[in-house]
Amino acid sequence: MTEFYSRSDMEKQGKWLANRVLKNFKHRRKLFKKQGTDAFRLYDWDIPEVRAVVDWYDGNLVVAEYVRQQTEGIPWLETVAGYVAEALGVAEDKVFLKKRQTRPGTWARRYERLDQSQHQVIVAEQGLRFIVNLRDYLDTGLFLDHRQTRAMVRDQARGKSILNLFAYTGSFTCYGAQGEATNSLTVDLSSKYIQWAQDNLALNELTAPQHQFLVADVLAFLDDAIADGRTWDLIILDPPSFSTRKNAFEFDIQRDHPWLLEKVQALLSAEGSLYFSTNHARFEMAPTVKGFKDISGQTVPPDFKSRRPHQCFLYQCKGTIS
Ligand SMILES: C[S@@+](CC[C@H](N)C(=O)[O-])C[C@H]1O[C@@H](n2cnc3c(N)ncnc32)[C@H](O)[C@@H]1O
Image (cartoon, rainbow, N blue to C red):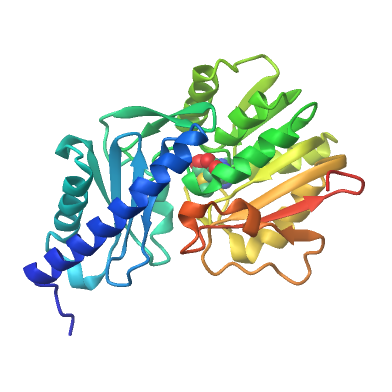
């Protein structure tokens, strides 16, 4: 039988969390400020009982609980978030609470809208700015764990054509454009996210005719692009773990990655590079897939080191960057 946490359990856990967050905040705020970044993780579920993550978005706190039976119907999240907000001196209206599921089958709802408040905040990251929405969706519009991968793309973008697949709010595209990519194509199924990606590019004054956007199912797009003989120098492939949405192909990254990678490889130019990332916790690259180097050691940032947020692989056609 499930044992629910008592009020004193919740208070004890709230104090643990607040202490940990405060300690991390003091150190990380300085570290990230030097990089021009004001959005970072403050707590990454490293105390087993405190199944939560806490993120800082320029003065706002997002506290997300990974739901479990012990806290069903009790104000666990509200209580621990209250302790964190108090420790950092953050006002109640700048604290955003989320409940995340770890169970498979709940993934399809991940990108659905939770509210309609259109609450937007602009955050800085490594010299760029991004619109985040802390209230209306489970995810905010910026995946903080790919900060270093985005910087890698910027460093390599000059003179390259970029294809950003499953692009979400186009953060990789912004880095590529700032890194002087010659052109880019940003593809996502959601017109809402494509608009958001265009807004992010505009916010950074990077809008230009050579940076194109497409609302499309990536699978259909891949077949068309292969048939048309199109190629790109730098491809970013960061698909959801599962995609079961109506009118979109049913997709399971563990089952489908071998054929997906093969199709995307067909779109690489002679010296092209492909960044493939997944946040599927138990993902294993199939032994039939060759030539991909696991670069997660370089892409996972210090504020995410306690749990593995993603796995990232780099495939390079012959003769490219080392
Ligand atoms: C994991 S997010 C990508 C994160 C993004 N690369 C970033 O770093 O910000 C997944 C995205 O895939 C999109 N998506 C899901 N199924 C799709 C499909 N069949 N074709 C195109 N986009 C799809 C969703 O709309 C969502 O924006």
